[in-house]
Length: 433
Ligand code: 5CA
Image (tube, rainbow, N blue to C red; front, side, top):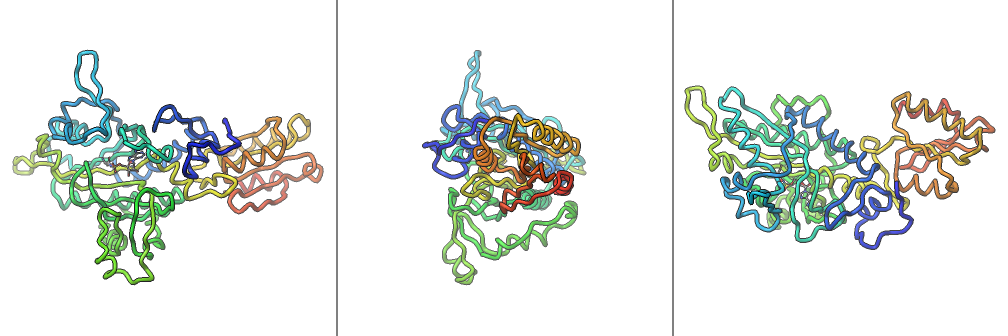
């Protein structure tokens, strides 16, 4: 947990600064990072929320490799189109390979080889895997990296109408996913770029440091995501209507005249945002050239209708920090915090304090609560600063003075409120948190 006292010079935005200072990441080369233990824990928490919501929506997890064969990309026509962002590699036999920037071709190949009947559709397959894009300007740490972790899902349907249903499921799953991480995401009509198709939404977190310029109706900020009782097999059009009938567009799709006509002046929100997810419906863009077909009821051949759905898993670590921090450091929402509690021993080496801490540590672990124990020899001030910087939701502060009264302190990182409690009462509070 290498903590930096001073702001690193290379970091331009607060999340990058705090990720370096709190010891979450270290740069290995431009736009490529190592995840240190604390950062890795957060990355895994985020990944798990993404996984649970994909599974809930009916998508099935798998894993595809990072290295792909260029031949597949020649089939779809994207090998030349993708340009310099693609990292091209040749192996010892001088075969052209590449580090995957996305997986439409590879999943389409798997699908066409393994699935032959209409009975196997619809199907949505996803993986959580590292991607590489040789960005011209990697910047802001993991916000725009060259190597980054993405969840990408791919849906396969018989008709465009069915495909729209698959699209809606992912749309709703995304609203829930980001809300569980304490983020307010707004879906916005978006450009499709090199992925293609004509129906697409970006999921945007409003933040001053965001790279995208966005325009939307202010009421969208007030909406809450569907609850965990949402039935993904039911008709989701009412939810879609609620979230897409009001104006919301990214810079590339923005139409100033329409914005002014559809949105009253006091409701016009123009802001900056971070793109944490992007979903696409592109029909047969890949299945047509790659001849991915299944047999229909009458034995006829049907070209499969597809969409793809991405979430920037590593980018989310930075996005959450942009949305949740103060002058002292990060404030993790409990759902993604590396640990729920930080236990601070104010006088390491003092037998009574050590014993009280050890006992609390044991009981917390036994109750299944993730706890980080600071038993270093640092002075109290440094321990408080470090604990605030790394931003665990709760702090338990144990020192000889309090113990004389039989009490310890419980601090809420977000509000800063501190309360003196008997150790057992503090434990109960955390078990209920
Ligand atoms: N194949 C589609 C969907 S699976 C796709 O690749 N979409 S994407 O290009 O929009 O990327 C999906 C998500 O990955 C983005 O919304 C963004 O959150 C994240 N992302 C894209 N590029 C980067 C990058 N350079 N650094 C960090 N995250 C990125």
